[in-house]
Image 1: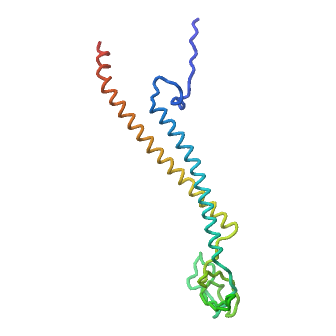
Image 2 (image 1 turned 120 degrees about the horizontal axis):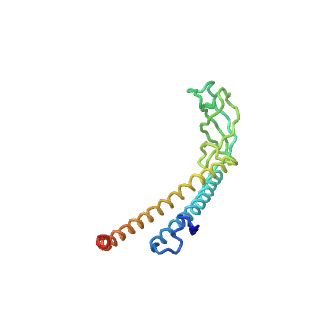
Image 3 (image 1 turned 30 degrees about the vertical axis):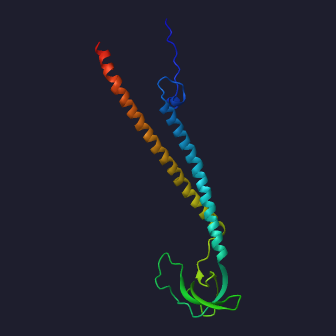
Length: 198
């Protein structure tokens, strides 16, 4: 009984890394480009996400530093019902308020208050350096969550950009290799036909 010699099967995925008489220099270059692209995409995406999250958090902190709370009072009775009640309305209405800063200056502006609040009711509002009422800044867990979401959105975008550049470079390399193969085939092809005819 004749025994068939066993064959070793090597995974095709790594053939560009092995010594192989059919492997060209461009195959090795392509393998390194693919590896570098994936590594840079991973590291670049993580780094971009972290930087974006930190920048977002710093922006929230800077905005909080520019604002301050003041105790204001309503100058008139607030409307009893919101003008355009909808499912997204929180039931508050716009009303005029007045407050006095620490330096004694008096300021007025408009803010949202609960419907039906009587004149003289106290309300805490956020004001900027120009003494205008502004929305409350993002703080605490909300700021952390928004910063994290910003980083989570930026990270894959940065990774996709790196992968796109790698894909373009690899595509050019493949086109160049195909052009080289065409040139070689133009030289060898006619001789191949002559050999097969003999």
